[in-house]
Length: 155
Image (tube, rainbow, N blue to C red; front, side, top):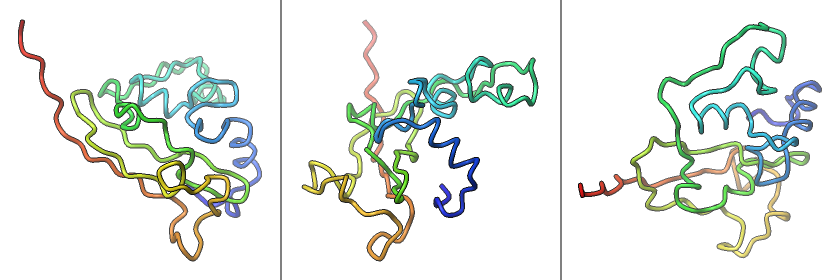
């Protein structure tokens, strides 16, 4: 994700119009999943979605976009956890824009904790914009330990 100072007004306006509350950045302000989230979580993006390329005038008869590998699962949801409140934070934007997707049949054994929240006793609201002298990247690391899911035995 490019830092805010490098975003042009149009891109920044798009983000402000389409991203919702912190921790819900996979949802747009109108409550629909973002195009990327929809494509990865369902395996396709319908031409009616407001972020489908046909919505931007590139083609009016463009079909649904399909991944070719079906539905993926978000590791945080597989583990029964909420998405991080954010994985990037600037002075004007924060959002969970980094995700770990996996195919079905994978078990999430553990997740890397975020450096804020209940586990760390650090309020996300006071976590500083990044990068800074402590956090050298504009993205916080996400990490997942994966394993194979136990297969159900035949009945």
